[in-house]
Image 1 (cartoon, rainbow, N blue to C red):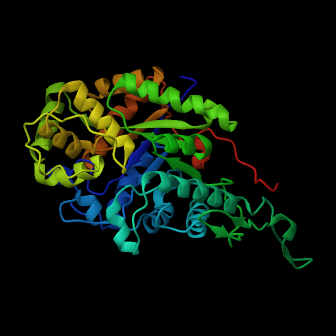
Image 2 (image 1 turned 135 degrees about the horizontal axis):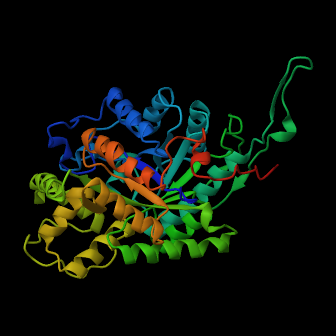
Length: 433
């Protein structure tokens, strides 16, 4: 067995990560159902996945990805999953632009206790300006969103540290319930937040929940290098993935961290077939459902411009990075330049995996590619984006995961009970300890 083991996360985007995956014959067509998410979690746990992840958004439109339009609030859903899973990490997005640090710290501390140490928070700045009117605000520009996020994350980490291990004594003989010397006020006063603390919940089973991030701009990468345990990347090309991986890892020593302290997981949509032609046929069927209409809203959001006025057969021009999501825009525009793509091509790419990488082939083909990236300095594992649920995810767990296990690249059984344990990360100490 390889000494270094791959990490796998499943990105659960409702009815499927493909914009029209819900149209496949065996696909779920609604995500507003607890049994649906429980079934997906059982598949993930059967495959020994590190983490099940729920993205989130704070806006909806009729032409959005179906799973952006109708879905549960993710923390509520994960709390329900905590009762029906035993090992699987449970992660969700919570915005740093449209939340308060005390609430976010409390949500994920509660989830960590409910799950016995399996919670993860994806700290995002909310790139879509359509969220702002739902909160009666103006959407902050990119640079300010990251300044807010820097302080927000620091406050959350500080609140999680306010309780030391062993602060709850519960001594019946003396009547002392809490050791007051091990509970601390944060007393944070910054540019954007004033938070006294402490939280009204004790030290988390993991010490602190796992912090996830996906920023790829300069401030996003610095925030990830300083505070993240797992980074989700958007890539389309092996050489670009290697360069991005090395660039992030090289930032870590600046913040007193080692390369192994942060796992980089590129997003990938695997399309599986018994033969390569069958996999191509499945992908072609999915892509036949993509139109300029059902992909236009998402593509406009990714690029920060209205793309509806461009002719489908026109070549994609050189465009500046938007004030929204740098990672998706950079990967997609780079691929468009590299391959001379038209707007129709870019619609198809967005509809397939929202800008993530798509690979189609047999189980051995997909395992070969993942192994090449994993061993070639491009990834510590992968963020798996099934095109639809449950069939596409079942296929990956039943066919690709055993192939990775035979190669000694992935665990056959869970060896830890916490998400921090799955990731091979040490228990952090409270800053007050």
